[in-house]
Length: 432
Ligand SMILES: Cc1ncc(COP(=O)(O)O)c(C=O)c1O
View (cartoon, protein in one colour):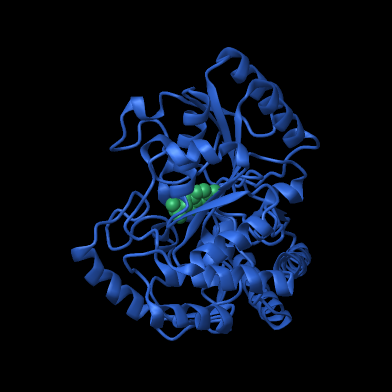
């Protein structure tokens, strides 16, 4: 099988290094933010030339089946005709105008109709907008300071959401953020008791999807106990559905796990790639949010709203979560069976529509050894071999399935994975 060449991507990266600083994952510069992590992996493509359906092509002309889906936003397939037409029509009428567009009302109505707890919706751009707003609403509603989060959480890049000691943050930023262990209800209860009367909210993704470790579903009854505790103590329960939103249940991932939060944050997939996010909530918070100052120059862009409305309607029409969960399960089952043939235990965790992959024969990389450690070892090498043959998969982060992924993609991915297993077997022999 052909191994891809990255000459043009690397040429562009050299130019980028002169004008774009890097990040801790790509210290030489040229790429920053979450895109820099995969850019650091040797052999990975860095710049795309075009995209369509479940695929993209890099600037060197190589074709990839995309299991990253832009880290979540792509959910119906790139260039989805219904979504693109809706955006195009709205662009022709106007995008950023001095008034709100009627489509904003339609979109709010659609979300309120679709998401089980939603009585209202506010729109913004990135996922950190609603997560930030939701905490402000919780603090305004309760008059309390403390925010409970789960270790390994990610709610965005605002200072309070970053790890204590992160460059550019001060200790006061995280002073009222309490970290507890996922699925450890006793610890949550203890944190609430120790801060009795001062916990404004618990904010969490619907299941645990941190990086570099296996993802974890909620333990039996975990969410139901948290919900009851929040009710008893007057704590606002916030679901950060920015990443998992619409890949489990269109009514919100909380429905999939059987509980009812007060506020739910959406982002990523809401507009199938168009920049839009949303906070939805119950009537109990309508008055509070009215008093919280929240705005942004681009929050009222009408074309992303039209794209989001089309995305929601299309997802409903085709029952997108069912498609993604089924094709995701099928592809992953095939990979697990192939791995077994080579003596490897490939563990899949998280939702089948957002699978985290890890070959367990060797221990997971240790992050304290530096960012480059992420891409070292048996598992990372196998992923790298897959990427260099045309299956774009992440080694350190959950992946994403879209409703555009097909049986044909599954077969091609299995063929690629098989060749990649051969390559790592050759490198490691019977070491693992
Ligand atoms: C669960 C979760 N919450 C919030 C965010 C922040 O979203 P954004 O990067 O769009 O601000 C992310 C982004 O990855 C996320 O995965």
